[in-house]
Length: 269
Image (cartoon, rainbow, N blue to C red; front, side, top):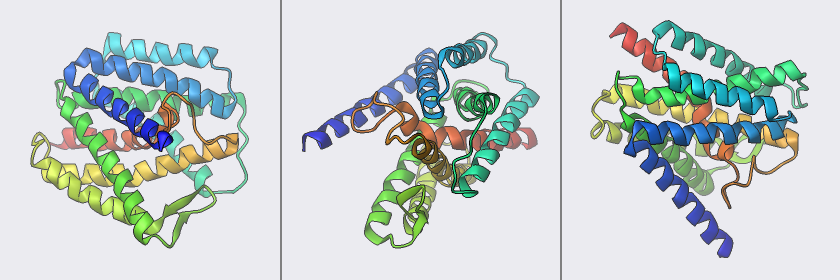
């Protein structure tokens, strides 16, 4: 009972902090996610057995460059997306490929650090500016969809799940839960579109589809990193929930696909 209470309180504080910082101002939003970025870098370095001194400097450097220059060039953003997607595709190949852990040399670990952690966080911090000005409700909508997918995937999977989705990586996930989460995320996308009207209902529904599908893959990717490292959680900063990477694994994996979609949408409109 005490453990459940701690978990609930920890989750509540996380959600309130995220929503408050995002809605309060551009500065509080970028500061919070800058802190999340550095914590995620440390957690990821522990998972892949990489000394975190230089990675922290690189993460901090990327964050400072984002804050100082705030480059909003279409082609620069596409280049960052493509670099991130290159790593994402390779992580998916590793995920669905051999059951044996893929050993990485030091340079490969740095590539994963940039493509899986640092650049996705930078893209995540750029998302609220996709409309041309700071629009925090874009981030709020995305996180609501992430939470909707996670919640209903769990509920449907617990109630009706029989067929394992990817048992050797995540034994509790089921195909029924995955489909249920995706369906309710589509419904949630339409509901959100009635309140956050800066995107059309179709754009929100596609957003939900990307979030639900790639968010689930992102959760599996991080589960594989943890399984290879022999740990249950990426960190201990959130009692009952694990680390920052455990909370944000879905969104950071989905964000390059989502950001690319938004950029293409802006370009053709």
